[in-house]
Amino acid sequence: MNNFLEQVYLNNSVKNYLVVAGIILMAIVFKRYVSKYIAGLLYVLVAKASKNIQKKLFCDLVVQPLDSFLVLFISFVAIDKLNFPEALDFKVFKVTSKSIIESIIYGTLIAVFIWLCLRLIDFIAMVLEEKANDTNDLTDNQLIVFFKDFFKVILVIIGVLLILRFSFNRNIGNLLTGLSIVGAALALATRESLENLIASFIIFFDKPFVTGDLVKVHNFTGTVEKIGLRSTRIRTDSKTYITVPNKQMVDSILDNISLRTQRKVEIRIEIGLDADAEKLQQLTPAIKQILSGFSAIENSSVFFMETGKHAHVFAIDYFTQMPQDFDAFNSDREQINLAILRLLQSMQLELAATSTDVKMHNA
Image (cartoon, rainbow, N blue to C red; front, side, top):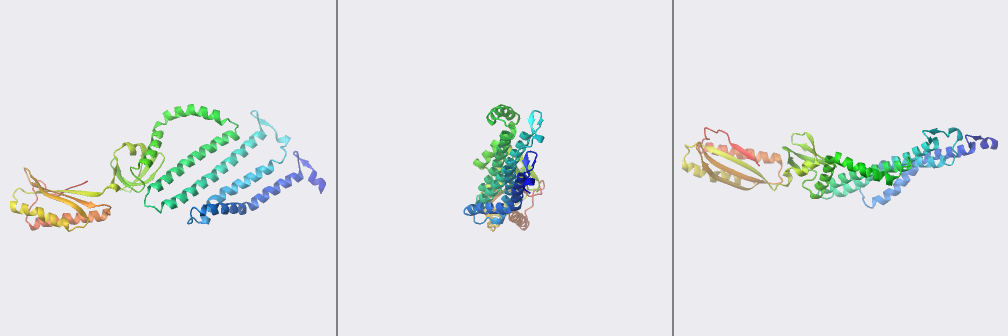
């Protein structure tokens, strides 16, 4: 038996092969237990910052990449104890097979470690979102989403640089120097993308709007659903989903409807020129009486505006309180319009023949 264990194949004894295989097998068998134990220790630390995050949710997020990292790390450390077989030592384009295998190992470990870090960023963002939900300010929520994506991009770039350093033996310092020159050229070529990136920072810190605001920009009106690194996504009042570059959101005239203190309604009524002056005098207080019956109206203005070539024009402006449900606003506006029409009928005042419609302009 001892003679069999001491036999050498490919520069390594059978005993060494069995030891390495046993270590890898144990790593595969016990990986889930070890990963859950490590995740549990991390959760104890995290639970102090957030008591509402479930342990299962945290474990489901980090256990899988932690499994892969542990198995790969232990396997590579165990295999490193073996002598590299001379029979497998050859060159490909002046690069030895051993160097190629080592590069693949380093690259795989770095990639799995970056994957684990990305999952941790997701969890940290989840904890911060939970705290942000306790406040009424939606700015915190959009900052979390923005910086989560931002740090993920930075982490991926760091991972690529580490792979270049350890898998391809490239000097990162010289590489960054070269990239700075290339970056300058790329900056000119991708100027619009950089402008959108800078505009996203302006949006977050200047806060002309936040996620959930109803805005009007470029003749589109809708609710802001997401603010990204490059663009803002808006769900329009037609239920379409549009993407607007952040630079245009900053440079354009933007109406943040959610920040309105009041909603204005303008009505222009044109009465026929044959109307009696006494009835016209009674019309203004009668309309004011109608408007006073609606609690949502905070202030209003009714007056005899002018007498033109074809009609007597009455101006009716009123402002409703904000925030007010849009359906409730439309319902009040409809009732006011009908009440005014009934008033005109009861007073036997006819609309001008040249304009038989009640003209309304919403501001």
